[in-house]
Image 1 (cartoon, rainbow, N blue to C red):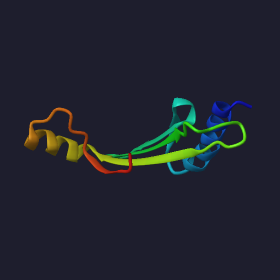
Image 2 (cartoon, helix red, strand yellow):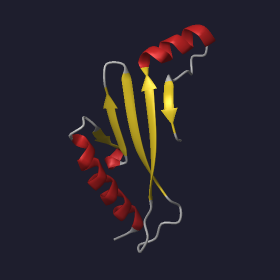
Image 3 (cartoon, rainbow, N blue to C red):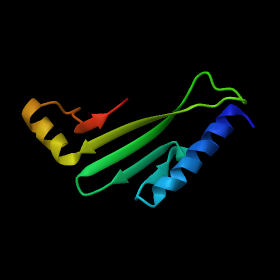
Image 4 (spheres, rainbow, N blue to C red):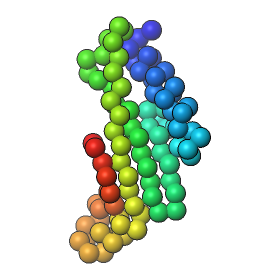
Amino acid sequence: MKPKEIFLTGCNEIAKAFIEYGFKPLKKGQLLKRIDKDMVYDIYFQSSQRNYSANVSILPQFSIYSKELKKWEMLHTKNEKSNGLIYGNL
């Protein structure tokens, strides 16, 4: 298998474990998203540039957003690009 195929297979295997917690796999399983009333949770799997068929790395990135915080930020900062980020390791 090619490194990209191995990477996507790995992403989808990881995604299966998160479905029971309300996450939905998007972008061929490379992004997991869960939306509650106010909160948005993203888990994104990034591929390493150094992947090859014998060694494939999956680099997870997590972020948590609040819709209410986004509204508050936009109101108080007048910045339309506010996103309500609470935590992110991007």
